[in-house]
Length: 570
Image 1: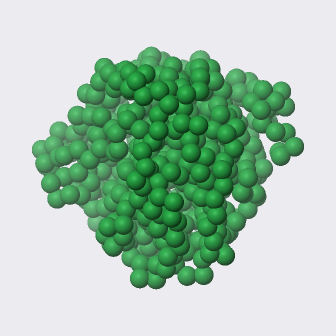
Image 2: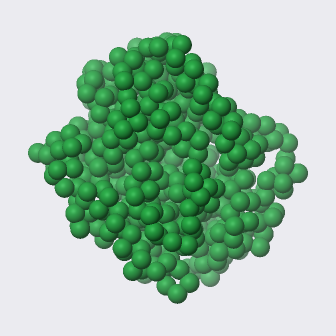
Image 3: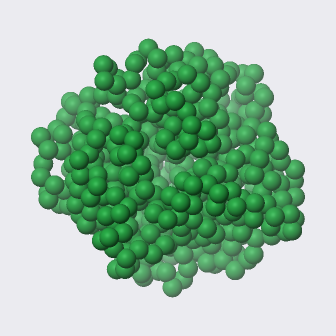
């Protein structure tokens, strides 16, 4: 099948073995690839009740049918495991060039299980997969590790935070791209896996090159015609959200205690452009190029990092934000969770001095202080859970649910916890894409959140950049998938696949011990100046209805039969 090699590489670090299998064609048809394939393979390889840091928790890297093609924003890959931060199933969509290189090596899925006796790294060159010693890399951070390995291919690696099993540790690929949130780096560290290096020489075969090329051109035109994509992200990068949210009066600050940050102007895109000479650092096949570096080669932080180390901790020093962001990338720490943990620590300790933050990150990167376990775990340990800004253990990013009712529903019902990427409701509620929604009401939001969640699951499975949702819908995605594979997909087909993926993730979490009580926002977002609890609970009930879940948030048997999810497994 074009766009799908069926090649799954299974690496067992416990017995130092590499085997391969042909993944069933039905997996491609029902789960597309990427996040969907990772989710389905978790069902094969993982018990939902396992300890996330046990050798039995697989670390699964997956590409999609569009990865490595000329489709715009299609150079991504996903990494899936049970998260040590949230204990949920967790798939992250990651950019850069590593995903395309995996695809060029002919790999649809790389499943890593077990634990090596000593540090190792994987070296992949097309059909050859080697487990090599990494003692010489022990204790090194991501920049140094990458420098020592990148002559062999594209590198994804952990820093000291992953080695120390820090719950918010991530992997860093291609020097400046994060593997995302949820603690994948800690899972790699628990396996004594320091890095993966991949080099591929194969071309991705497309079933219908001519019509696929036409579909590619159409999607590019849609991106160009979309102001948030072409006039916002392309021109300024994701830091443009700082300006937009400040203008809308929805820029949360000081651990969500405030909704306005006086120093926002110092963090604006104008301030960034005045201070640095900027150049784009786009991911593979991306015509937008929202990732940016300065003249010194270091990244310009994206909005998530600017917010996490800026308004969220009461800091308006742009250069300090860059330094804190650099430390996170070097140690292999998720900047959002790191910033949230620091904000929580500052609130508990009566707002420590900003100049002390760098030292705290260094301690966290080396696995010291309880705060490195994540903000929610830390706050529970000091009996200050009321300060939490986390859903299912994952801290909210800088999009305030008190100002975006749709985002409030999306956060609460996300399978990975407080992630804005499970359904980016800021698009319709702030930017008016695809339509502008009333930010003052929950009315009509539950059904739209369900749609966005299903669509996002499709995007993560193809695998495309999450920002593609601003301009590209299910019709265009179905055309791209049909032409690359030679199989006919309708928009209804792919949205059904997205719904199947979302429900399978939900079932994993239920088996892991999550209940409807976990579909809730932190207490500080409710009250006189916040969200009306009764309206919120009614919206969640409506959401369950549109999902065909019962009152306890459990998918009913008829829905699972419709989605062709085998009942006896659950």
